[in-house]
Length: 333
Ligand SMILES: Cc1ncc(COP(=O)(O)O)c(C=O)c1O
Image (cartoon, rainbow, N blue to C red):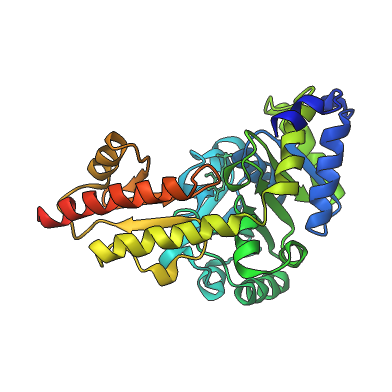
């Protein structure tokens, strides 16, 4: 990847003159069966550019209550675009079209906020890497269409969903007006996301990207890392998924209430520490001292993520440490 970065032809991307960025944007749009894409420094920006092209100020975006857009983008939709949000709640973030549609209030006139779009996160991060069933996406899309609502896909980890479900990327693309994808995270690029849609929305997004101060110059260096990631690192995500399953089995072996390995579909393992005397923060702190970095995402909820830098030895090491700590955390109660 570093050699690809060094060899990349570059130009000024603010003027759409960087050939490596241009080819990356064309490549990714085509993968999803769409007309155009715009390169962004982060997945959050790709999400925000997408939803601001879909939802006017004072209108409403619906999403799941643990989705990244509402929990982890620090109010950006409201702050920058005047968008209001309402949420439905789903166990593991698993899409339930009916729950989403029950909230929809399109064309609500002067009395209620009008719904204009619905966001779906696939895979669902805080839900534990949940893959959204394509049948449920299709159901949501058909009803949304009849209500005049647009769908946005937060596909930061759509590659993981694609590898786990074997659903083609272009099949996902059929149901969504806008899509965000990340080349960092599981694909291993240092930076880089794209917002994907039709030509018109992408050219609007390009204006807003510049307005937000994220117009980039010779950024083909990073686009080259993205090309490399797409060439080499998609299919190997299956290895991360197998490792996550092994981690879940090991944790369940020591503390059965923490996780159900059958629910681990991709590279994220959510650990429920409700049955232990330790908080997730205490657990994460103890793990870090032993050399295993995990996230505390709730008072009793910790997240383990596998990725390309964790090899078999790394997995064995993590399992050893987690087993020891879970024994302590659950015995102490
Ligand atoms: C589902 C999802 N969407 C969007 C993002 C945002 O990506 P970034 O950290 O590049 O802004 C993340 C980051 O973890 C995510 O998990």
